[in-house]
Length: 333
Image: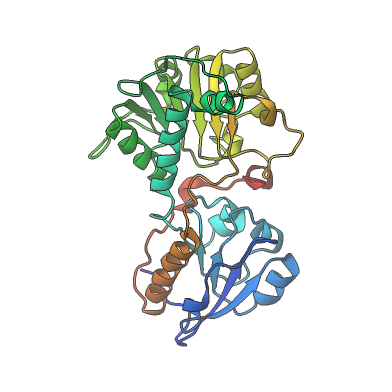
């Protein structure tokens, strides 16, 4: 239960939007809240006094770290990840944080299946050969029975496991601790990760960014992956040590990688990932279906209704469980 912050019919709410990006469709919220759209630290600082509600529509934003949360009592994020709010001041406060579950999970899972099919069926090479007007018969790999490991059984990981299994893949799961999930079955503890890496043909990372997960896939751990396997990352870029991944690709220990997230975003033009044919570079767009911005606003609108009615909010995130991450962890991811 969240005690509503105001008895007025239109509480004040700040909407943080990324610079250079259009506003989400906020018109439908006008009858329910007095909205102030901000993009810069100065605008955010000016809007904060007397405001208790924040709609964080920019997952890359550092404004909360730069300015602080002021008197905010509720923050809703347009993303599943809540990296920008994991500051000491917010994590150790009574501020309630909710996210937009149900918008991006299935699309991300579909993207994961798509890139695994692309690799198995060598579709990238097929397109290249068509452009060269070259007829070259080749044999491809099956998806049926292929061994996959999903690291991170959160909302995205859950959808990914279910979809890959529906496609006929054999999927194991690693989480923080060992348990039996009613829907997914056995989840192995993080201590079993290295052993399971050696058994898997495809490894899919759906991890949030925390102090524990940053750099988790370094040279040592990548070296424990099965020779010729492939890596897919739809979690956070900083979970992988990028130069170690590049070395694993260049040595052909890993056969390929599909990356939708990176340590620095946008990925710099000079980054070597661009030039590697065995690495797919995607612009952090795996979950962005046509119309997703409107669906995110719908999530916020429903929680705004609940906030005003003093009802429990949906999709509240346990930020204390995630813990504080420093600016270096949040930047660009």
